[in-house]
Amino acid sequence: MVTTLYLVRHGVTVGGEQRRYKGSIDVPLSDEGWEQAQKTAAFICSDVARRAAQAEQEGHAPYRLEAIYSSPLSRALRTAEAICAPYAMHPVVNPDLRERHFGIWEGMTFSEIKAQYPEEFRAWARNPLDHAPVGGETTREVETRCIRVMHHLIERHKGRALAIVAHGGVNRVMLCTIMGLPLEHIFRIEQDNAAVNIIEFWE
Image (cartoon, rainbow, N blue to C red; front, side, top):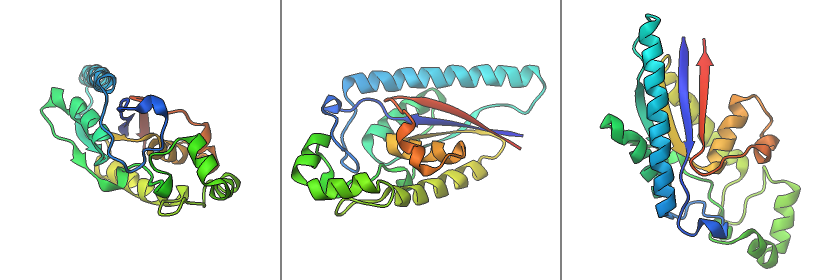
């Protein structure tokens, strides 16, 4: 039995080229981001159709995308809506899929953080997994909520296919767990805008 997870990052956002820590700020998709979302939807739709045809040919149970879950932030939700459209479905919002809250660093660039909060930045650089900006979350706190919901959703759709549309930080945490990597490796995993990770869980 195999469970298939399509783990997706949202498309490019308005002002994304400034590389600011958006975190919990609800920044919308740009026109380019919406175009990316539509291309991502087409790719997933094509992959689902291919797998469905293969399942039918081999006499397996029907293959279909059963549910699409999304972060509540509009950049992820709009991306999820694009993926839902070919199936006349609606994304299921789960607040635990939201991006990490960066506290007082939100809306700032890397350079601005180093200049305005040098001591706090050094503390984070020494211990990036357990240190949080004032008012924000640690990486381990993000891991706790993300992995809990990931396991729950995979169990709910065991033997079937589902999609999760979330954020760079959230996806990296999930991928570390899926690949059995220490959380420290989160910074080595790339997640471009509109990235699609296809993961199969076999039992």
